[in-house]
Structures are given as C-alpha cells and as structure tokens.
Length: 365
Ligand SMILES: Cc1cc2nc3c(=O)[nH]c(=O)nc-3n(C[C@H](O)[C@H](O)[C@H](O)COP(=O)(O)OP(=O)(O)OC[C@H]3O[C@@H](n4cnc5c(N)ncnc54)[C@H](O)[C@@H]3O)c2cc1C
Image (cartoon, rainbow, N blue to C red; front, top):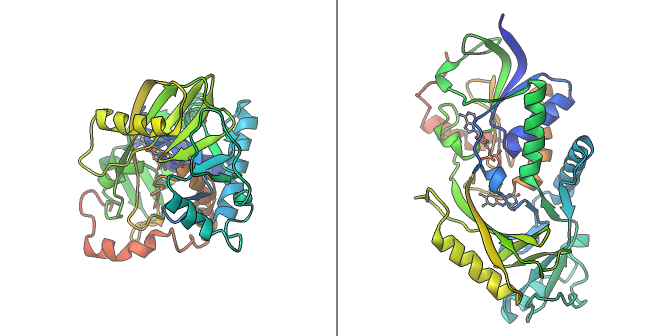
C-alpha cells in the first residue's frame, strides 16, 4: 500500500525541524527525510541569539517579532523533552578600541536599542579573568541555544514516532502532478518542502536561488576560570557551556572550502580568546560547518514559480537560531492558508534569476 502524508520535508536542520514542528502542531502529517550529517550547520553552530550585532551595531531585523517566537519554541521543546535548551544570558559586547567605543556610544542617543541594551552610561561589571580596557555594553534578552540537543531530541522523537527517517532524498524519484507529489513507488504527499541548508545549490528545482555557502569553524575549550554568567564578545564569541567548558566562534570563509578543521581557524580563534581573557585555557575540539548564506542576507521562503507543490525554506545564514521558529510559522501560514510570505524573505524577489536560468536538470512533469 502507498504511504501518504500531507508534507514531505527534505532536511532536518533548524529549518526542517522548526517547520516539521509547526506543521505537526497544526495537525498535519509530515514525513522528514534527513541525510544525517554530524557537521551540518545546525550541529556545528555556536547557537547564539544576539539581539544587537554586526558592524553597524543595529537591532536585529524584526527582533521584536522573532525573539518571542524563538523563545516560545525553545521553551516548548524544553517542556516536551524535560531538558534546558535556551540559556538566556547577558552578552558583554566588549569594545576593541577607543574609536569603536566612541562610535557606538555616539549612536546611543535616543535609545535606539530599547531594552535590549543596558544603560550605556553605566559602567560594565568587572568580570574576573576578562580583559575590558575600553569598556563595553551589556546586551539583554539574548543568549544561546543548544542546537545539537534540539536536533537530537527531535530526531529521536521523529524516529520513534515514524515521522523522520535517516535517508537521502533522490531528486530523480520525485514526480509532481496536479494533485500532489509521488516520491518513488511508495510515497504520495501533498507538498514537498526543501530544507537542505547549503546543499540547496544542488537542488534541481531551487538551484537558481542565490545561496552562497559560507564555511565556519568553532572551538571547544576547557576554561574553568572563565565566567559562566555571561556570553563574551570581542572579535569572537565565547559561549559558556557549563562544567568549565566554553565554545569559541566563529570564523567565516568563502569557497574553496576546507574538508576538515583548519590550523588557520584554530590559530585565529585561539588568538582572539587570548586577547579576551587572562585565564588559562585548553582547546579540546574543533568543528567545521557550512552556513546557507544569501546575497541580501535575508532567508528564502516560498513555493516554486512553476511547481506550487514544491516549496523551500532556506537562507538562514548566520542567524538560524533566532530566525527559524517565526519563519517556519510564516511559511506554514503560506502553505496552509495561502497567506503572503513576508516580502523581504519571499523567493519571488529573485524570480528574475529563475527566468534567466530556468532549471533543466530534473524538473518534474
Ligand atoms: C561555525 C558556525 C557557527 C554558527 N553559529 C551560529 C550562531 O551562533 N547562531 C545562529 O543563529 N546561527 C549560527 N550558525 C548558522 C546556523 O547554523 C544556520 O543558520 C542554521 O543551522 C541553518 O539551518 P538549515 O536547516 O538551513 O541547514 P542545516 O543545519 O545545514 O541542515 C540541513 C539538513 O539537510 C540535510 N540534507 C541536505 N541534503 C539532503 C538530501 N538530499 N536528503 C536528505 N537530507 C538532506 C542535511 O543532512 C542537514 O541535516 C552557525 C553556523 C556555522 C557553520
């Protein structure tokens, strides 16, 4: 007998996991295929949610809407799995020079960061073992998420309950028609949503999207004397994991990519940690992954211009932890009710690329 589901989701990183959760919450039947990769972006990520970041030190896009949704999602998982997953911690943004201090503080007039930044006039707390010669700012309401534990819990639940399989999706086995999609001889679904991260560049229906994969590395470090109550940031992020361990990240590299963790990244991150702290530390591990980055730094959501049964959720770049939960709802609304996808993230903005280079590889009949 043919197996049936409302949705087939390809990929179970943050994009696929949040979308599967959202659709199942709405009572939809879902089957997720995931080619388990220990170095997928989600498994390597430092997990940070940072409400104010970047060279311009501006509030993150749509933060007032994204952060509550992220918080609700990770707290719901915590309740389901009985494990703490979202560690809300203040982030100390430490200035690297007098110039940076002046630039950022000059922008504080008029309170542009709302309650995401503690009073800029108040001196930072002195944190033992942390070098802070130029001062800094304390960012609030962010922290970090244990993305590996998020995926481990959901993957195990999906396998036990039959809605997730460790399997590689093969494009040649997909056939779309007017009423849905067949995959191989045994599966019939209403829609397929591709959530493959950087591998979307090899997807025959969506390879025209301007995803420019970017490789990053993080270090696992033993540093028992570093504070556990703050995330630190100057040049690199230092995320307290507990038990005397921190994660230090991350690097950015455009192709060609390394196939393994590199000595360059290890040196760069070690050096940044050395500049940040006076306490002894030891590097115990190093991991490398690839971010699905997009030219305009905004995610990619929507249905295929010619095949409405095929959709995509990608382009989470370096902010998937904050972005994915709310955007999964936006895409689910579009798929379930026909609501418009937000224009900033709708793939329709790149339709000219599709028209210029229509995919020819395995486009369904
Ligand atoms: C070093 C590093 C540090 C980062 N730090 C942070 C951070 O601090 N905060 C933050 O918000 N973000 C961070 N990110 C970014 C974050 O990891 C990404 O935004 C997010 O994880 C992307 O999720 P995704 O689901 O799109 O992709 P992925 O996590 O890559 O998941 C894609 C999944 O699809 C599967 N797949 C692909 N092709 C197929 C196929 N044909 N069949 C079946 N399965 C398939 C893969 O196996 C994988 O499991 C970091 C990334 C890196 C690399």
